[in-house]
Image (cartoon, rainbow, N blue to C red; front, side, top):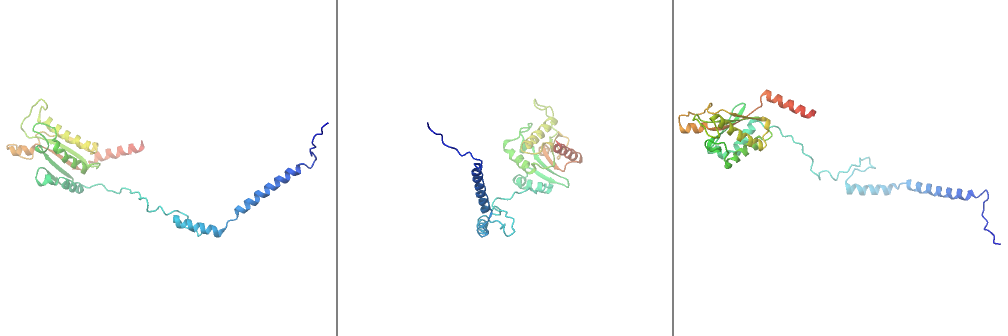
Length: 250
């Protein structure tokens, strides 16, 4: 008959487990204590080394520890302080961009106290009796658009004709032709970035001549498109401010 192994089931058996637990706790506290003791000399050496690499203020010496190595590396953001152009600025820019046409007297620019008027004769833009802009003349309007783009000025585009009656399949009168020419010029400028709400299209037909219609030369000067740049009227300015306020609220 085999005998079973004897097991120690005495009342002191728990002491072994308790002793093991105490030993483990003691070891844990020793490790924590050792880890909490900072070698200040070693820490200072490491801090100085990092300061040289990253160019930080020394923390131990009361510095903020802020990294400064990146300062000056990336370009600082530039916030636009560009002020709105004055009428004088616009006049100077137009004079520069259209200097060749001004020197050859193909067009004219006149400035007074409150506005600038650019006069474009028919021969520079259109075929007689039509409102299709010559492709080679679009660069003139491109220059005008670049000078006026995104500016808050009121831009009136007026079509004018001579007093010779016209009645074609396309146009019933000089009034129709003058309006269509102004519309073609205005719409092209809008496509090139002119603020649409600032553009005013008008056609005066033969009613505002600048020369005597009794001569060929005079009639040629009367057939024209005028672009007038001026400060917005009080009503337009008020409407613009109101619209901007509504957009901000929305």
